Length: 118
Image 1: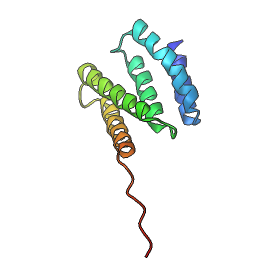
Image 2 (image 1 turned 180 degrees about the horizontal axis):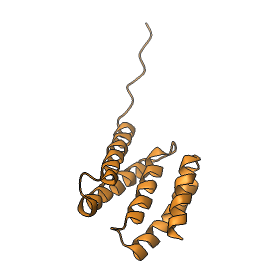
Image 3 (image 1 turned 120 degrees about the horizontal axis):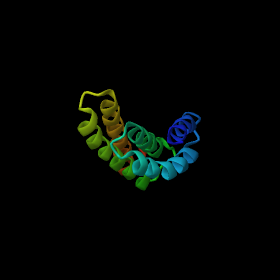
Image 4 (image 1 turned 30 degrees about the vertical axis):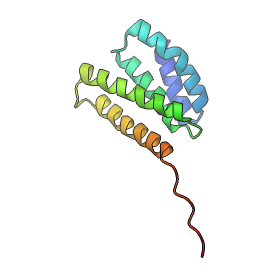
């Protein structure tokens, strides 16, 4: 079921099996959207987990980080409309939006050149 997939994906994240979680969520989030609707809390939660998997992956590409930011921007808009700005889910999504933006900015910012030894 969709709830079982959600729980399994979350467990995979906690076990640091990020790629497996992302693969599962790539298959099941569209199903949740189609069956439950994008405004459903389970759909929001699954998308939230997917966004986290994207930006918390140590092997995340720039495209992954951009997708994470876009995912959280979409989720934030939906959560505000459906749940309100003070709801814990909305606040959690906003927190992850900030973290994903920071991860993207950190990756885009070139590292300073190494200091020269004299």
